[in-house]
Length: 464
Ligand code: ADP
Ligand code: F6P
Image 1: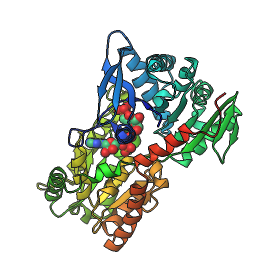
Image 2: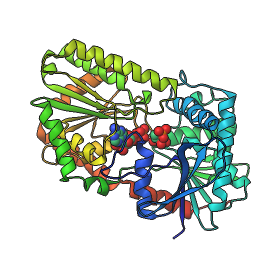
Image 3: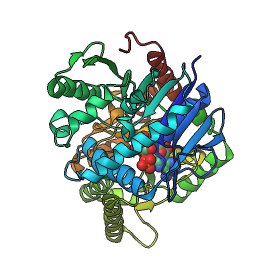
Image 4: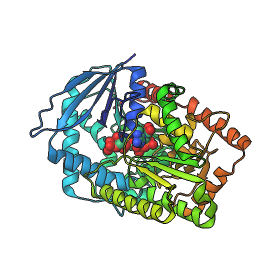
């Protein structure tokens, strides 16, 4: 079996019981995949140094090795806070109103991609498969080829791919996508993002695109683009069932809710997750059904994320204000309807919280996949499962059509789904859950990685 080298911006080894947090779906998924397959996980340490050296810090983790480099503060600013999170992230989540186009960000992004290529090349042996993750490294494949690497190179995008009409608002968009075509395999979370990508290649680059196989040919490069919906590490997650930590977390939440039904949200504090809109939906529900005030407890767990970026500071302030206002208006001496918790929890605790919740509220405005939806389903009691309310704008909606699918822009729609979920008979809850759970169980992160790696290892085309 070829050695696997995974590259991602964030390298974060999760520990079942330890403090987990805002590291997001990519880190949780890569832990699962690498534990199974072994290999090297290469990326940014998360630390800053005055002068970039490219010096690698190697550490042995659970079945794999991590290799990390430190970055200079202005690189972090321009590449990570700048181009990745102030330009690409909002644009790719359809928020061109928030996207900032600064030449310095673009330069920093290219510079750091080159630094990554420089540090990575000496690590790579002839037969290695190199698998790059996410929007931080769209041009890394091209950089690696420029260094003479002939290995198979794959890219997986964890976030949506925007419609062509939005993407063309990005200066130098052609250059960015042309650079991506140096990868052999390009993976997306859903067919919707894949189709947008192929559409762009055909329309804007006049590439030769075969929709059926996902093959894109341009200037002698052949890349294959496919949808590989990511899953959770089902076995690892299910091992928390019945643990003391999960049980205690369950009792803590269920007990403190007393006779109210718990609605749970678990998200990085990000404007793409639709958190203020959830409060609007609660408001709508409480206005139309006054009795709901005494029947629901909404727990939103939202650890801060990307705190140096202004739009993230703003979403945090907005949420604090809205939660405060809402609770001010609807609380009583012995009742507060929203518990807003700004921190991370261990994965075993999350399991217990999910299980204690009658409703999983997963309503992003736009999301590559959304693993919380899958974790919520996995954690349910098969005899008395809760109901998943899922935004149709999450990649997960393509696979999870037995959830209550909602338009997260419509407070009315989400409020209606909350009411329906609360009144759903147990037979219907079980029937929906069984289908959803089969999807989550049968399409886990291990299979996801295997499928991607299989195509990467044996592509039906030749590198020219
Ligand atoms: P994203 O990658 O955009 O953050 P996902 O829903 O795909 O969104 O993945 C989020 C992952 O991070 C899930 O595995 C979830 O359990 C984890 N996570 C999110 N918030 C917390 C938290 N407060 N504590 C622990 N884990 C969290
Ligand atoms: O899964 C999407 C993602 O953007 C990952 O790429 C990223 O690691 C994660 O969310 C959390 O964001 P960050 O690494 O910027 O804290």
